Structure formats: structure tokens, C-alpha cells
Image (cartoon, rainbow, N blue to C red; front, top):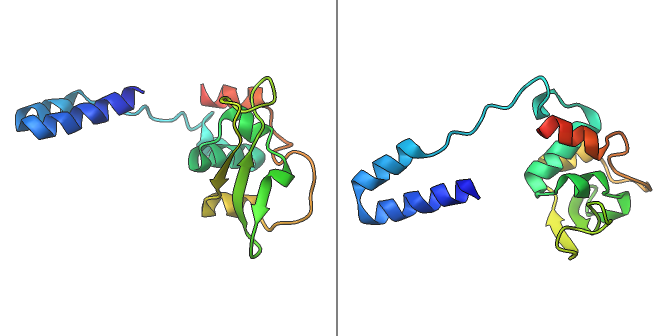
Length: 135
């Protein structure tokens, strides 16, 4: 939300005054550098796939962890769509609505070739472990 406010402030400043635009650029918050020992750069296997899904598909931690193989749709030997229908403590998405999200090519590479599988996609990672890495 803070980032969105900064973007809006810059857009408004650009419309009205070059001086305000310069001030908005100087006051904009700088993103924090990720901790490479505990962050996504150090992640491997299922954790790396989880971070990729959260970054490229917009999945929340609970949605990524509870994703099932039958939630992934494929075409031409490549995963193309994620059906998000579970996540969180109550087993539903945050807004209780299902949604379809396209699979980014980097996520498709991490998921590998579509095969007939069952169970959780990220069976080697827990929600708590992911949350520890993000915080």
C-alpha cells in the first residue's frame, strides 16, 4: 500500500510541478535489500519454487503451500495455468473466491514437465518455514 501511495504521489507531482516531482523522487522509500542467507536467493528445491510462485503468480504463502497437482493445468508439455482454490487457515482463499493465474515461464521450468501426480506440489516445505524466510 505504501508503494502505491508513493507511485500516486509521483504521478500527481508530475502533472502539477517539476519541483514536486523531484521532491517525490527523493522521498520515495527505497526497497530493503533481501537477506541472502535467509531470503529467497538462498532457497532451494520446493522453497525456491514457492518463492517463484509467490513472486510471478501472486500466490499468498498459504495458497502456495496448499497447492495440489490437480490445480495445475497444462498444454503442450508445459504448465500454463494455476487454479487457486485453497489457502489460509480455513482452507479457502483470502476472499473465498477461486481464481485462475497464468504460469510464468520461470515457474514452469521449476515445476518441470507435466506428469500424472497427486498430493501437494510443494510437499517439502511448510507454511511456517516460508514465513520465517520472508520475515
